[in-house]
Amino acid sequence: MKRTNKSVEIHVRCWLEVNGIKFFGPGRVDLLEKIIEFGSISKAAQSMNMSYKKAWGMIEEINALARTPFVIARKGGHAGGGAEVTQAGILAVRSFKRLNKKISLLVGKESELLKL
Image (cartoon, rainbow, N blue to C red; front, side, top):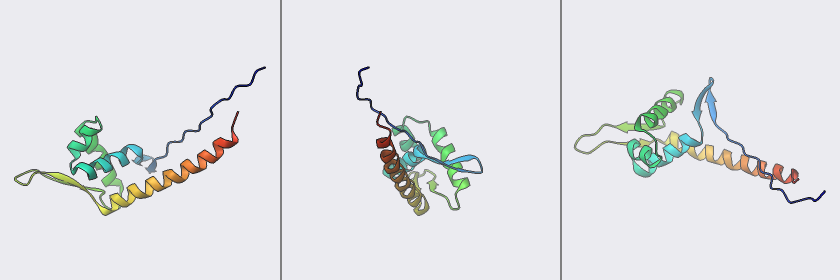
Protein backbone atom coordinates (compact mmCIF):
# COMPACT_ATOMS: atom_id res chain seq x y z
CA MET A 1 0.00 0.00 0.00
CA LYS A 2 1.43 3.34 -1.05
CA ARG A 3 1.21 6.18 1.47
CA THR A 4 0.50 9.64 0.20
CA ASN A 5 0.72 12.89 2.08
CA LYS A 6 -2.72 13.92 3.20
CA SER A 7 -3.75 17.32 4.36
CA VAL A 8 -5.81 17.21 7.53
CA GLU A 9 -7.52 20.37 8.72
CA ILE A 10 -9.77 21.05 11.66
CA HIS A 11 -12.39 23.75 11.22
CA VAL A 12 -14.13 25.31 14.18
CA ARG A 13 -16.80 27.99 14.12
CA CYS A 14 -17.45 29.83 17.35
CA TRP A 15 -20.42 32.00 18.35
CA LEU A 16 -22.02 33.15 21.56
CA GLU A 17 -25.60 32.46 22.62
CA VAL A 18 -27.70 34.04 25.35
CA ASN A 19 -30.46 31.78 26.63
CA GLY A 20 -30.23 29.72 23.44
CA ILE A 21 -30.48 32.77 21.14
CA LYS A 22 -27.58 33.54 18.81
CA PHE A 23 -26.00 36.71 20.14
CA PHE A 24 -22.58 37.21 18.59
CA GLY A 25 -20.47 35.44 16.01
CA PRO A 26 -18.36 35.95 12.89
CA GLY A 27 -21.18 37.41 10.76
CA ARG A 28 -22.18 39.91 13.41
CA VAL A 29 -18.55 40.86 13.99
CA ASP A 30 -18.18 41.48 10.24
CA LEU A 31 -21.34 43.60 10.26
CA LEU A 32 -20.12 45.75 13.16
CA GLU A 33 -16.74 46.20 11.48
CA LYS A 34 -18.47 47.34 8.29
CA ILE A 35 -20.63 49.78 10.27
CA ILE A 36 -17.44 51.18 11.80
CA GLU A 37 -15.95 51.49 8.31
CA PHE A 38 -18.96 53.07 6.58
CA GLY A 39 -20.84 54.72 9.45
CA SER A 40 -24.04 53.29 7.99
CA ILE A 41 -26.06 50.11 8.47
CA SER A 42 -27.32 50.33 4.90
CA LYS A 43 -23.83 50.67 3.38
CA ALA A 44 -22.48 47.96 5.69
CA ALA A 45 -25.24 45.56 4.62
CA GLN A 46 -24.76 46.41 0.96
CA SER A 47 -21.01 45.74 1.18
CA MET A 48 -21.81 42.29 2.60
CA ASN A 49 -24.50 41.49 0.00
CA MET A 50 -27.03 41.44 2.83
CA SER A 51 -30.44 43.07 2.93
CA TYR A 52 -30.87 46.11 5.15
CA LYS A 53 -33.75 44.29 6.87
CA LYS A 54 -31.51 41.36 7.82
CA ALA A 55 -28.73 43.66 9.04
CA TRP A 56 -31.18 45.73 11.08
CA GLY A 57 -32.66 42.56 12.57
CA MET A 58 -29.21 41.36 13.62
CA ILE A 59 -28.48 44.70 15.25
CA GLU A 60 -31.80 44.69 17.08
CA GLU A 61 -31.03 41.20 18.44
CA ILE A 62 -27.53 42.22 19.53
CA ASN A 63 -28.77 45.39 21.23
CA ALA A 64 -31.62 43.54 22.96
CA LEU A 65 -29.32 40.85 24.38
CA ALA A 66 -26.33 43.03 25.29
CA ARG A 67 -26.06 44.86 28.60
CA THR A 68 -25.69 48.11 26.67
CA PRO A 69 -26.33 48.76 22.96
CA PHE A 70 -23.55 47.86 20.53
CA VAL A 71 -24.94 50.07 17.74
CA ILE A 72 -26.68 53.44 17.88
CA ALA A 73 -28.58 54.43 14.73
CA ARG A 74 -29.31 58.04 13.82
CA LYS A 75 -32.30 58.89 11.65
CA GLY A 76 -31.80 60.82 8.43
CA GLY A 77 -32.49 64.47 7.89
CA HIS A 78 -30.40 67.48 6.85
CA ALA A 79 -27.28 66.02 8.42
CA GLY A 80 -28.11 62.56 7.08
CA GLY A 81 -28.54 59.39 9.07
CA GLY A 82 -25.93 56.94 10.07
CA ALA A 83 -24.89 54.46 12.69
CA GLU A 84 -22.19 54.26 15.28
CA VAL A 85 -20.72 51.23 17.00
CA THR A 86 -20.46 52.00 20.71
CA GLN A 87 -17.46 51.36 22.94
CA ALA A 88 -19.23 48.22 24.19
CA GLY A 89 -19.55 47.02 20.60
CA ILE A 90 -15.93 47.80 19.80
CA LEU A 91 -14.80 45.95 22.91
CA ALA A 92 -16.99 42.95 22.01
CA VAL A 93 -15.49 42.82 18.49
CA ARG A 94 -11.93 42.96 19.87
CA SER A 95 -12.66 40.34 22.53
CA PHE A 96 -14.33 37.99 20.06
CA LYS A 97 -11.45 38.29 17.61
CA ARG A 98 -8.95 37.64 20.40
CA LEU A 99 -10.91 34.54 21.44
CA ASN A 100 -10.93 33.27 17.85
CA LYS A 101 -7.15 33.71 17.58
CA LYS A 102 -6.70 31.61 20.72
CA ILE A 103 -9.03 28.95 19.35
CA SER A 104 -7.18 28.93 16.02
CA LEU A 105 -3.83 28.47 17.76
CA LEU A 106 -5.19 25.58 19.80
CA VAL A 107 -6.78 23.93 16.77
CA GLY A 108 -3.57 24.40 14.78
CA LYS A 109 -1.57 22.59 17.44
CA GLU A 110 -4.10 19.75 17.59
CA SER A 111 -4.17 19.32 13.81
CA GLU A 112 -0.39 18.70 13.92
CA LEU A 113 -1.15 15.64 16.05
CA LEU A 114 -3.51 14.30 13.40
CA LYS A 115 -1.05 14.07 10.52
CA LEU A 116 -2.24 11.04 8.58
